[in-house]
Amino acid sequence: MLHFNFDYYRPSSIKEAVDLFVKLDKKGKKPIYFSGGTEVTTLGRLNLIHTKAVIDVKGIPECNALEIKENSVVVGAAHTLTRVFESKIFPLLGEACVRIADRTSRNQITFGGNLASDIIYREAILPLLLSNSTLVIAGCDGVKEYPVEEVFNEKLRLKRGEFLVQTKSDGMYRKFPFFIDKKRKSEKVDYPLITLELLKVNRAYRLAISGLCAYPFRSYEMEQALNNTNLSVEERINQAILAIPAPVISDIRGSRDYRIFVLRNLLLDGLVYLGGVRA
Image (tube, rainbow, N blue to C red; front, top):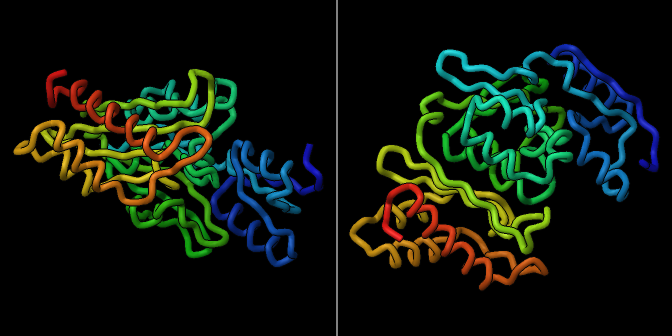
């Protein structure tokens, strides 16, 4: 149960949502956009957020898009993780979504909510980084499209009053082979030690990881090492590990050394799975 009361709004258009935010913000109500509401509820119970107004974007048609349009895979931010997976519209993204939390939670957590989460994992961003996707963002300046790496830097960098409408990914990425694995401290549902994704585009590997560092990332330096076929497989993996772009997390779920051990095995598993090396 939340310890504060708030007004609830469900606009039916992007313009209505943005206008509502501006109006409520001027009144000092500290409005929040939300769709599934999972994180708002959780953080609200912990008194980590407080608002007098929430704006639910689930009634906005663009936030509910789920289609292939002009060879672009369009996924609305208001869809649940379960819906994204079951649609089969973008296998790489769907497989990432189905590994987040448990089925009951995935039925509530939205795609956009995961991307904008304050929790460090944000695993739904990994396929978007690997596929050089575009994010459609609405705000006071209108609706604009940005390359994912322009607005996602460690976390989704939205300006005040902006919200994520949908994502767009080139349809060609639906056909490329990929490897996804998620390792936890135990087999029970828990936050991951590491979630690793490899995408094989023609003969080159792309790599994105969550849980290893304090934010999810795609590393071009690690990819360069993995794609250096002049080196042995062991040395390619060693060089990739040396190129990790930020400090490795060490916590109650796993030490730094243990996470690197897990990473090393996941990289080998992925290369074997995608046919890059022999077991």
